[in-house]
Length: 88
Image (cartoon, rainbow, N blue to C red):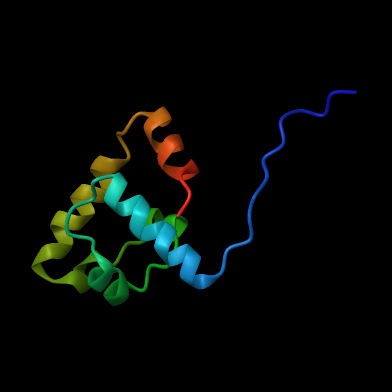
């Protein structure tokens, strides 16, 4: 009996989540969103990155970062998938 494709998810801790997020931001080429900006926003995961709305907390840089995040949504699916599959 074929039960479809299985996706195996690893358990991550907060430190690994943060490293994965920083790696994702770097590889997606989201400029202006370094560790200090992530600390200010309180974003801790890739999921939170795309749901985040309070970019004004970053001051003048917030608008640029928001544009970069929106631009990252236009990347080809295979590129995003390869970035997500990278080990941290």
